[in-house]
Length: 336
Image 1 (tube, helix red, strand yellow):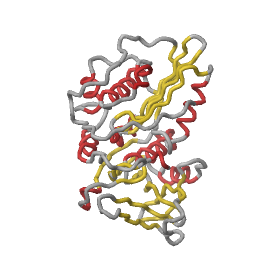
Image 2 (cartoon, rainbow, N blue to C red):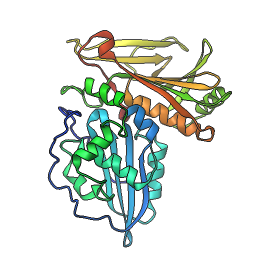
Image 3 (tube, rainbow, N blue to C red):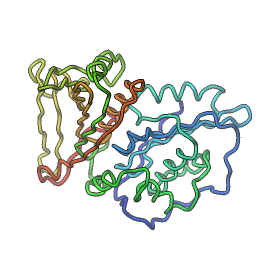
């Protein structure tokens, strides 16, 4: 896979603007050519809960394959990263798609979707992403544009009745990324997602997650009332204090000017990144950021595909609103 391009700037973007001009160069006169080999887009349930997803497409043109991927994040302004390979060897798309699907802690989740729907996500994110990189222009048209113009694309992504719930759009608008946010951080938006699993399936799913051998990894925190709680854990930097083995400790770190704050949860000698609490027939995800919630929900849905899980509710709450500070941020998924 080709080298991942740097993250694109998202400072100062206003998701509510309806009349932004697109960057020049969108090659709408070009029609997609060649055989479409693969077409993946954001997992719809994960997108509705978090606004995170990945687009990946591959076409065969002659003896070559053209691979294109885009990481999407509403809270970061739309399209955040690209990876492209215009002259890939035959069959390369299988290896790349498997890599992306497996590494849920590094890339926003994706699933195979119809090209027209993937196009709605991709062009909608583009229309809503000011300052999209020049290299995007040569690949965006790997899929046919949706009907209408840029305002239509944006509206179908984040407008009333679009692909994104109004509550999620609203909380992102109310908690924009500050201009001085450090690289690798994101605004804290506490996200809670309830998923119906079916009677008797909660403990079964918890055991499945505990058997995972690739990140994200989980550790049992035991019982909390009637719930069995699993914590997503990772090693944490040696300079941070440890909590007693088997105990969960949430610590609050503020910068000297008190304008920024970081929450870290410790589980023994590891850092907790979010939790899933299981009852007999339900799972509830809780994470302090949208990107972390996207990872947890993607893992849960992948582990329960045979059970036909249903997302029953999602709520969002900003830490800024809860405790009144100006900005909050935490490590984003790409640092996990």
